[in-house]
Each structure stands twice: as C-alpha cells, then as structure tokens.
Image 1 (cartoon, helix red, strand yellow):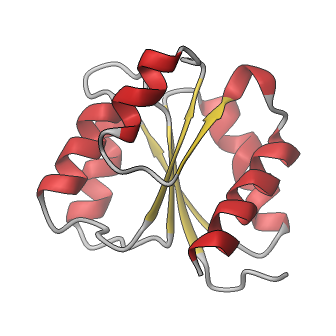
Image 2 (cartoon, one colour; image 1 turned 90 degrees about the vertical axis):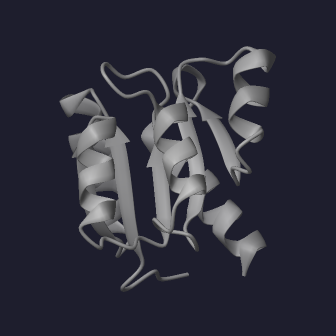
Length: 129
C-alpha cells in the first residue's frame, strides 16, 4: 500500500529519533515534515502545514505534546489529521490523558522499533479510511 503524497508531521525533541523515523516513513513514500518540539510544531501548523498524520511525542520541554494536542483541538489547525501519540509514557493514566483529546492511536516508544511504528501508523490510517 503506497502513501504517495501522504504528509506526516513527526514531532519530537530527540533529533536522532526524528531522523530515524523520517527515513522510515520516506522509504514508504510519505512526505515527511519534522518539528523539533511542540512550539515548532505549532508554528508549522499555524503557517498552514496540513499533514494527513501527526506523530506526536508527549514529554518535550517548553510545550508538551498534550499542550500541542489541546491547541490543535481548540483551533482550526490540522483538523482532519490522524493524530498518533508516540511516547515513552506508557502508563494507563498517560494513555487516558491523551485519549481525552480524541487521538487516533497511542504507541509506546520503548516497546516498538521504528519499522513497527510505521506498521502501526499504516494500520491506524487504514482503519480511518
């Protein structure tokens, strides 16, 4: 299943992970945008970036992933995007806090390798179509 033209925004404060996930998604035909942290993500979305998918870390300095989610849900930013949280926070309370914002999926970084993250994103996208 090809995803030509599917734009994904990957938001994380770990440049190594951003690079690694970018490579994986580009190999599968995604158009990848990265944001190094929550503020950069909000800036790009406010400037008109409208990705099909947002892969969002939760724990980031300055603006957390949950704050980014809140801003997206309050406004008109990326309102049709599939939002998937990618976090090391795997406790049920963390998952529930993110689910309160109507996310489409939650992936725990520590227990998934990048190719599995890609597979999970594709599964979630297929269910949404």
